[in-house]
Length: 294
Image 1 (cartoon, rainbow, N blue to C red):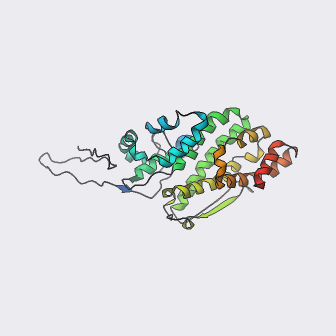
Image 2 (cartoon, rainbow, N blue to C red; image 1 turned 90 degrees about the vertical axis):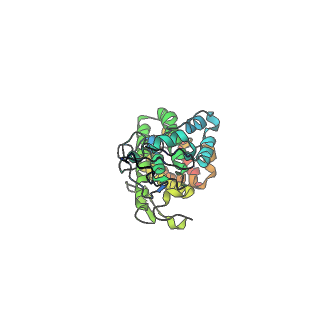
Image 3 (cartoon, rainbow, N blue to C red; image 1 turned 180 degrees about the vertical axis):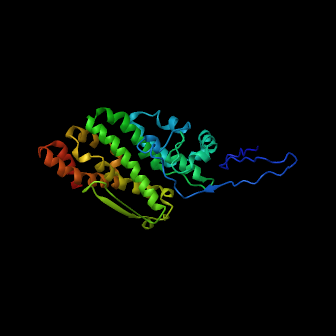
């Protein structure tokens, strides 16, 4: 057995059943670029680990040890700059489990969208979308730890449902991109909206390539958010829960038009329902109204 220990080459190579007198090494591909996104197992959809599992040292040391006040900025910077192929511990672990991490509906304990991407893109220079580490894993974990305990039972049920729909919609969009250039999703409940996205309108993105462009992938993910929030039952939550949810996004996020876009798409369904169910002077209703006026 021979292993390639060159850190510039992402791969582990082995040869089996080689005659003892045979001195020439077996040939092995140094790279692998598989654009076919394999579907996630139903059992992992709805968990934070769906996006990413911090298997190596870098994420923990960089993100989990910063102060609360600077956490989001650190996560954003980390997601943008981090090249997971430089994390030797992570790479070593995943490469030894590659065959278990790439099949459809994989239930391996190390599987995530992030690790699945890495094992489909070995040595080709592609990095997983930063969304998996930042908006996906970070906010999923953060909301579970800090928002969930402060919600009513109805709000907690909403958070679990919305998390499931966020990931299910991501799966639906990735699967559609395997078939065509257009992604078109609609809500599962009447009146909650829909969206259509032609990836050809974005530079360097076509069929099979949604994961390869960071900004395009983030745009796609943000378009799925209102559908997930609303299908999870956001419009029917009590004012106390809505107030808690409304203040969760980090203040720096509101500088991104996509954040306002998802807030508007959600508010135009939530506000009328809240006005029907509660006093028109309700402060949460007024807050949602201000969002819609932006």
